[in-house]
Amino acid sequence: MSYVVLARKYRPPNFDALVGQEHVVQALANALTQQRLHHAYLFTGTRGVGKTTISRILAKSLNCTGADGQGSITAHPCGVCDACRDIDAGRFIDYVELDAASNRGVDEISQLLDQAVYKPVVGRFKVYMIDEVHMLSTTAFNAMLKTLEEPPEYLKFVLATTDPQKVPATVLSRCLQFNLRPMAPQTVHEHLAAVLASEHISAEPGALRLLARAARGSMRDALSLTDQAIAFGAGTLDEPGVRQMLGAVDRGHAVRIIEALAAADGAGLVQAVDALRALGLSASGTLEEMAGLLQQMAVLQAVPGAADPDDPDTPEAARVATLFAPDETQLFYSITLHGRAELGLAPDEYSGLVMVLLRMLAFKPKGVVAANPTVAGAAAVAARALSQPVQVQVREPVTAKRADPAPAALTPRLRGTVAAAQPAVVASTPVLRVATVPVEPPPWLDAPFEDEAVAAPPKPATRAAALFVAEPDPAAFFAQAADADANANVDLAHAPPRSVPTALGARWAELVREMSDAGLISAFARELATQAQCTALDEAAPGLVCELRVERETLRAAAHCDKLQAALTQVLQRAVRLEVELGVAEDSPSKRAAAQRAQRQVEAEQIIHDDPLVRALMAQYKTARIVPGSVKPH
Image (cartoon, rainbow, N blue to C red; front, side, top):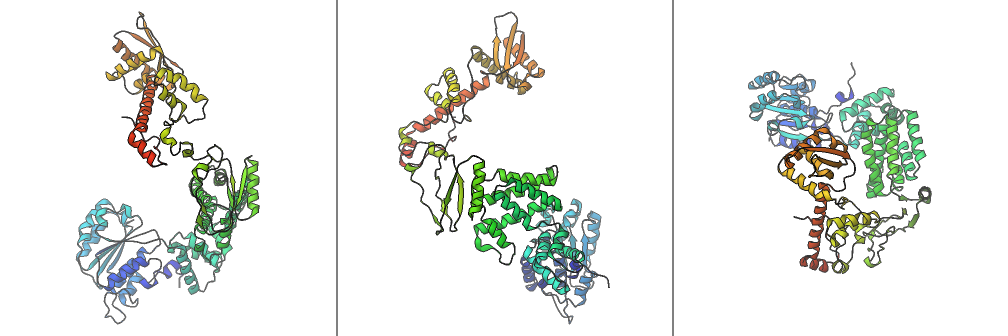
């Protein structure tokens, strides 16, 4: 007798034997029991989760006659009547399976629907099962819409697809849709154990866990891999053999990398990658194993009681989980996931793996949480190597509670000191935290507090803004703002661009405005005019020459200059020769406009600060602040 692969030999014959799809089984079983049958069903889900299997069980349930030949529609097909045996063997004339991937045209669908007018030959119902229905053409879908909406009472449609997004909404609305979920690794593990027990094949639990993970939620893939593992191991399944067959990375490699990260050991990370290269292990598999370990660590850090006691990897994961703070674990997990996607862009996968690990080391927070002084000492040595001061704080085991925030009056306001901005949650487990200073204080500590917010005028963001409040004249502002901001430790992101007004600046701005209003310049020509500074323009001279200075080389293109020269000639009513040089434009129309916008912004903010209602609210609510950037001038 020829050998039958496990995926076919152990295909569930009824709903009771189906695993991992309890939500679908319950709905269909209740519908069959209560005789509330829909005329069209749509099963969606990834490969190997049971779409075709459920379709065949449903067909047997609809046509089962029982062992005595007197049965009716049932949720528990007998499996011994002619209809059940013929459907399992694939020779039941009233059950038709159509592969839409190879029969996707309107002719094939029309031929199938032409047979729908005839009643079943031997069964109670005709069942049309169309697999991979999303592969049908648009005309084929349109051809079956009417029959799918109002089929004869003896006809049932079962559609299956791995990509429901490609199925037209007109088809979806006519079907009862069931989404089959990927199998959980534990479910696959238990089913494989039962199958191998029936086959009298010994298997190590570690080998079954590897197969369950490699199946990626597909029971068919799990059984196919089990067939391969049986052949690879000559009838036995041991963990080393299955790991070698799958090319899986041992958890020990991931643990050593995590320990090297905890100790900030860059050389150890490179050596770990070299060891993986020597063993021929996959870099992608290494990151996948690291992601699994980090996910397990994060769960143990958040919910210690959620650990699986039967998993042999749990004790090791619990040990390394104490080496990092929860935020570090989340950071490394995110870098690991993004690193897997970037391996294909690296020169080779091992250099890509090195860069991912070095990125973790580079972005590692300056603090290390450890459960023993050895790791904390390693962190201190690493911090001293970086010439940064280290502060060690030991927390005793106490009941979890929320610490009181530090009084505002005692909060340090000097830069470079540590300030408690939020209440801290004290952990219930004794930990040793190595923190580094200096730490930048929160930005709100520099703002006036309580009565100072009302008594003192609003603090400008920069020295330049302060000069604008005191001296609104643009010439005086630009002359003083440059020196003030050059020596001040302030953020210049919102300061107006530096500009030095010139005698020709106003005249050039007026000419640019006239050309723009008349529609003589557009696009790059207008950009050249607004970004340029006029350095020479003698309108009384017989040969009029206009000299401009612009910072961007691309604006000096001959086409842009010719358009601007033609516009100047038309505005001034005389021939003009335009010369454009490369250099810093200190007084351009764009910088003048920016200065005017900045002045309007300062005036608008001042109006808000002087508003009686705003001042009253800030006096009533001591911690109230005006959100920076929220004030917009009209």
